[in-house]
Length: 311
Image (cartoon, rainbow, N blue to C red; front, side, top):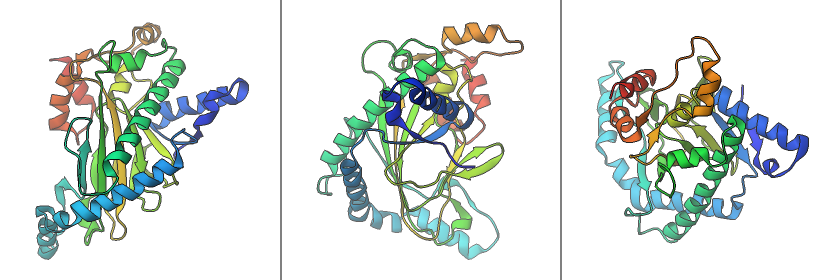
């Protein structure tokens, strides 16, 4: 099995070709929770610059700190014990978050300009993908975007997580990134096109998300699962630590504002009510969900939905 790879440019077409592409995206959302986009509209020249500045940033501003980190020392200590135990509650990951208003790395030439341009392109792509989801779900155009923004305006959270997974001397003793589903809305990942390691869980099997040059990997978060009343499911995924390579990963999250009320779309509830034994998802404020998620990120998601139902 391989993660679906979809030519996004064909959404702009018409007729049978467009219909097939829309069906492919619907299948990616319904059956996988993950799919890869080619011809997504983000210039390759920009993506090449993003690779360059993010790798340079790690070398210039992050690598030495990681090598001297508590995590590195803990792994060495665990390896010396040789008792078969793993480092369970950490991830073999160097990470920082880019928001429009937080402090960005400042020593890497071109980093700020390149990443600001990239984030603007990714946000536009996220909104186009949400419009496709609206159409596939039979919702009014702009429905999901409006829901994530808490109504009109531009209140959604848009963050970019810049990660590197350096070579690990004992990959059997630690996770690159522990298995989880994403809490938010639409996630757009620009992953390393040479060093693999990302896997998703499908039909009780862990499947590699194959590295493909300059694709954008899309996955749906827990809030899309709720808005679609379970038609689209958020998928479990993880990253394996590896002895070689330095995996680069840039994940951008289009998430609800903390004050947004999230609930299944009424149009989808009407359809669900025609089915028997179909329990609808809860209605809640996203900030309440995030409080629960912060404590239960690496645990099964169903109890999170139950907990927020009771808030």
